[in-house]
Every structure is written in C-alpha cells, then in structure tokens.
Image (cartoon, protein in one colour):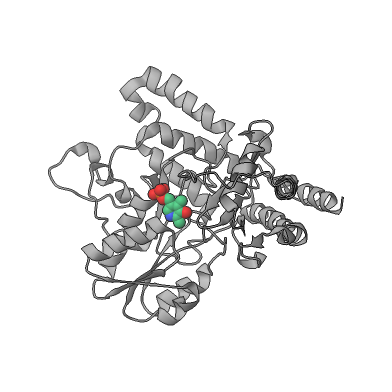
Length: 407
Ligand SMILES: *Cc1c(COP(=O)(O)O)cnc(C)c1O
C-alpha cells in the first residue's frame, strides 16, 4: 500500500504532463519501450490520413506546393528545435540518425582539417562507433575510443571532434553536456552530440551550451513511428564553412533551378540530400503536436520520480530475487529509462511480454524499461515490479527459449 500511495502522489503531482489520452495504447498492455519505439499518438494517424486522403489523393503532385511538402523537413525540424533548445531554422528532419551522424562528422572534420583524432566513448551505441570508424578511415583520422571517465583527460589539441551519445542506451547515465562541450571548446575541438535517447525525454539547451552539431532519433521519445526520419542540428556559425559530404539536389540552394553545378543552401537545409519521405515526415510532424504546452523539465522530472520509485521498489523486492540494478542511480544525471540485470534476463523479458508488460532485453543480461511520461505513469512502475515478483516467485519463465533477434 505504501508503494501505491507513492505512485498516486507522483501521478497527481505531474498531472500537467500527462498526455495518455492523446495516444493509442491497447488495453491490457503496459508499454515500457518508448525509448525504442514510441507509442502512436492519435495525431500521427490523423496526419497520415490527411496526407494521403487530402494531399496525395487529391492534390497529387501539386501538394509539393499546396501542402508545402517541400519544406516538411524544415517545418518538422522547427518543432524538434523547440524541444532541444535550438532556434527555429537550425534543425531539419531527414534520413536516419546513422546517416545524419555521417554527414555531420564529415562536416565537423572539414572544419578541423589540421587535427588528427576523433575522441569518443568506447561504450557508445554501436552504429555511432561504426559510422565514426568509417568517416575516420575515409578522412585518415585516428579514432580514440575511451571510457567516459577518461574523456576529459584525453581532450587535447590533437582532438578534432568529440562525439558522444548524451544518454547511455543501457545504463541511462546522462553525460554532462555542458562540462564536456566547454572542455572540448577549450582545446579547440568541436562537439557532435547524439541525442537519440534524450530528445523528447529530457530538457536540452543545445544553443545555450554552444553545441556545434547534434543528431537524434525520430522514432524513440519523439513518437514519430517505426523508422521515422531522424534530425540534425547545426550551429548557424558552421553552416557556410562546413559543407556536408552528400551533395544532393534537396540540399541545393535552388533544387528546381536544375542547374549543372551544386550550390549548397545557405541554411541547415544544406544537410538534406534527396526527396523527403512525405508520409513518414507527416506522421512525425503530427506526432510532435503532443508536446504542445509541455514543459520538458517537468516531463523529465516525472520520469525521474518514476525511476526513483522503481529503484527503491527494486531494491526492496527484486534484489533478493536475483536481480541487480543496472541503471544509473543518481537522478541528477539520468535519462528516462531504467535497467536491471539478471542471468535469465531474456527469458524473464519474454515472460513479461506474455503478461502484457513490454520492455526489452539487451545482451548479455540487461532488462530495459523506458519511461515515457507523456503516456506512462507511476502506476506502470508498480505493474512492472509486481509482474517481476510474480514471474520469479512462480518461476513463470522459460529458460529454454532461443533468443530471437530483437530491435
Ligand atoms: C537508436 C539509436 C540510433 C539509431 O540510428 P538509426 O540510424 O536511426 O538506426 C543511433 N544512435 C543511438 C545512440 C541510438 O540510441
């Protein structure tokens, strides 16, 4: 009962950021994977319906102008800009996070041609490391991948770019963006931040912290739908000197001039490459309307309160049942998900899913649960812990399961 009262108090305190009614969530499901695929806002479905029935279906090719499809990457980017502390006109929604990272890493390295190293986190998300390796091989730079605690010590005048993911996808630990950005700038390096697990979940201030470049994901906490376009932020001071490596017609100053030579757009539109995926962008653009009126500090505050409740309840009831708490405990530097470790983690996650509690599993033994406070509440935390208690006590999990490929 003590836990019930705690949960109710959190949900009451943060009623101002509750948008559950704006989402399509199936009955009987406790969805705790919004850090991997955000739930579907009704506004996303409405936007796709609008874009098909009224735009594509009626206006046909005229809709590039009549519905302003042409500037959908910029219009969607402006909505994302307001969530990451960026000014309008500094973000575009396009491509995937991996591709956007490729583009900004090349751009950043062009700005630091004389420097030999790229510094990153050895535990960075795999695609980020693959992309950094590839760009560095192309541009003949050394990749220096170290643990987070070594980052400041490794920063010196040989470093061209420091690139990090803000919130760790396993532990939820949040890097100190202000301190690391300042330290990089102090030695003349540029920063590229990956906000995949931050955008839409934590309060950000990329402009105030003087961030050079940032990329992030549209389908996680931004709820843009499976495979939604990602985004890219470029500080205005870098636009004219940091041409990106994929010179396509949509990044041209005048795509419809059909001129022989490439002239980059004078703004962040330069980071576009080809024709925008209008239906996917429409869904993302529509989804972002659920953030209208949301104070990101309050939203993150709710998820931190939920995670504190989770950690305490887990300490009281799950540690004795063979789990260890894997997520970062300090709320001052935590993102919006929590994690446990258990040797039978995969089988336990499958048992949870069978009971309608959807989280995910990350090798080798991590059970991960995203708290998306627009539609998750503290009651969901209790449902999760109670389900885990039941599964362990009843031994209601099958360790004979083969591991499926899980995203
Ligand atoms: C989810 C995620 C990605 C995903 O990249 P895609 O190109 O969209 O598949 C990249 N980086 C990080 C840190 C992520 O969490």
